[in-house]
Structures are given as structure tokens and as C-alpha cells.
Image (cartoon, rainbow, N blue to C red; front, side, top):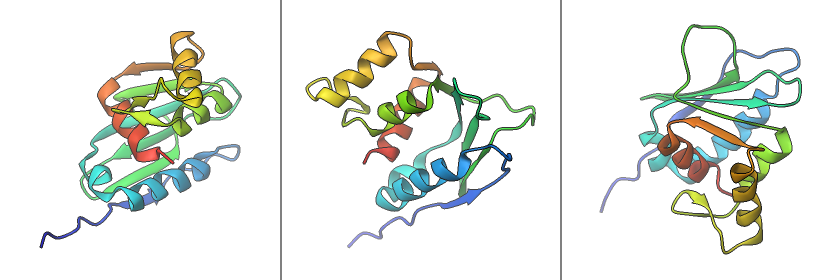
Length: 139
């Protein structure tokens, strides 16, 4: 019998007055509970930047914890940046996946792929980290 890996602790960090990090915290925490092995293997920093006037949300995946916070200038460059409007980013995160990418055989997957292909959602940096984070967030 193999031991089940426990999910890393998900911690809420810096909060801006108009920030939305607590919303993403809930999604990350849920994903870590559903997929503890994946959550425990993720390493790096992801930042989500919005077209709307919300501060970016930064997620740091470390050895012992996942830190979710409204980004502030700390001198650390993210490994991957996902940017777009809040609804477009949410649609990307909620699309059914195949191999860590939106599923082209599903309408929501095709829609998410079109948003990326059309430049409405941009992914810059580690696409591998972005794919693994999308798997973590998968509903």
C-alpha cells in the first residue's frame, strides 16, 4: 500500500484593497486538495495580470506551501505570466483539458484555445508551468 501525498499548505499572502487574490486562493486550495501530488510537484512563480484595473495575482509554488497574493514589487520575476480580461482568464482555467491544454473536441476547450490563438489571453514564459497549473485548477 502506498502513502497518499498530502497537499501542500495554501497560504494567502499580501492583499491589496482592490485585489482579487482571495478568489484565486479558493481555486488553488480546492485544486491542491483534489490533486495533492500535482500541487506538491509544482515549483515556480506564476502571475496573472488582468485587463481590468485589478492588481495582478501572484502564485508561488514552493516545497512546503503555495503562496497566493496580490502582486507587489518584491524584485522576483515570475516564471510565467498569464494575461487577459478576468472572464477570459477564468474561461481558460475552467476549460476541460487534454494533456494540460484546453480540449479541442469540447466547445469550451475550443473557445479557450481561440482566446489564446487570438491574443485575448496571453501566456508568456514557462508554458510547462502554465499547463500544470491549469491541470491543478481543472474543475
